[in-house]
Length: 243
Image (cartoon, rainbow, N blue to C red; front, side, top):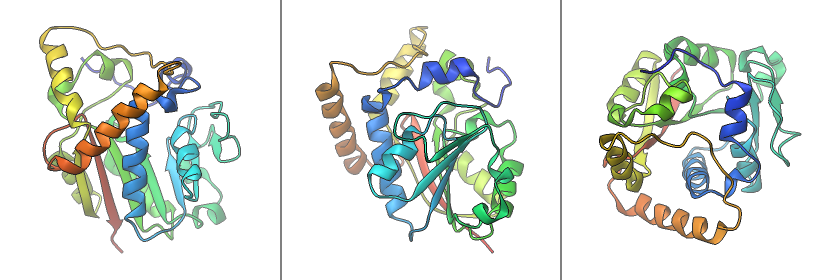
């Protein structure tokens, strides 16, 4: 069912990252979860690899984090992220002096696009001499695999166990891993059981920002109250680099 592709195309960026999409509850909560995980590390400058149009980069910088982004595709950065996002380049092709500037690498919804993530992660670790931590988000639970995953070229969805297997193969030291978006798990499962297709085009929540803010607040409450191993539709994980 899942087509074999490892990168976004122009149309994918148009569909997934329209201007204003950061106001959607999904992005608001994901930004919160990423920022929380980053704050729990011991500092350092972060490079987001596979940053798309820079929606996460822009949010993290607004929260006070020192963060840049690179994207393999020749993207048009989100307004406000232009100075911090470089498109059309692989992370390991950055100048050696630039690679030495980063202590954290963020891979946010990137691994699912890779048929073999081990070599990719290992090359990143080797290419950044001062790297201390990696931070990941991935879509979770193969039973939720749908037309959405097929449309965006996902090879797999992860569990906590399968993600830890990736870390072990890459000789990374797991620090924290937990599901989030637990409230979305059951609706997604029921949608699949009803043989209903998921929408693949994201829309900015124009006119509904207060509602999306409320939903994001409820998801934050859920994040802190529900045990971390209760399945959700995404996983956040952090690792330390072993020397």
